[in-house]
Image (cartoon, rainbow, N blue to C red; front, side, top):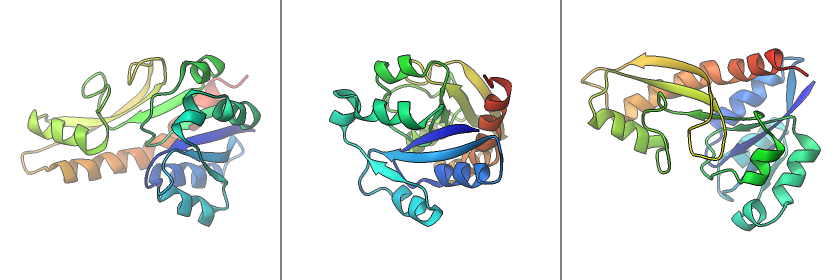
Length: 190
């Protein structure tokens, strides 16, 4: 059984969805959630799910091996679920093709530094896109440029607002993210 560590920065709805999904499989188990925001709702979600959730600061992430050592002890696969910091090269090098992110747009459109959450949905609306979606991809040294694993699309119309777009994206995330993670585990099982 593979061990998953999730990185989160906010409410934790994707983290909770992944934890619940893998509680009912023999493929993998979430061993820990790591969070860079002391006030994130993900802590409450993890407490309710009986999953360890640990806070870390930027120095522990980028200037020491604190986070890397946790991952080496507890992770076969690292999942970014609404995590906003760039992953340090030391972690990417230690987990090649084992760090997966979800992005709330159809990459390569609307990716890169600063393109997350409502920033993405506002840009999609402003550019009058007729579709958007999610991209699940491997993490490399550059924001949102790792190899694409999976994309799912949703149609948009003139009445859509950034908020309704966010709702459509949330449905896609909840539907596909855990299943795609499981598929990656099953097809790359070592």
